[in-house]
Image (cartoon, rainbow, N blue to C red; front, side, top):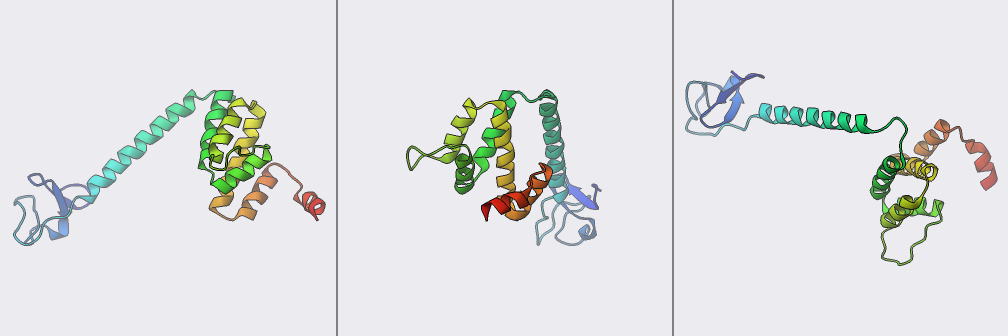
Length: 168
């Protein structure tokens, strides 16, 4: 019997719940498939493959993390900033572009491409600010925008009340 209460039919390569083993139409450890129904594919096999993929992904991510220096260099920031800029929607990308004074030369030019070109020429401080801005905009697009801005303002000790008073 396979783990998880399943019986394995080696001949056919399928698994069935152990409670069905021995009933007509289901595979058992002693007999091939019955007459009326086919056995369902083994769910245990899929979860094993998924677990292996998860562990492999974690190990690769750990190796990448170990390769990143303690202080991020310009190439590391550029890598992160470009990927984040490409994840932003056209509207959110336009907000970030406006923050840095980037304007479209042509109407059909994607904003992500313009942001990537700008970031390649930017210094580390500007890239770091662009990464934080991209993360805030991405978070805002996936949930409550005002809460995302409030959380970011709290993390960076920004006085939102003073800004609100200036705007009004």
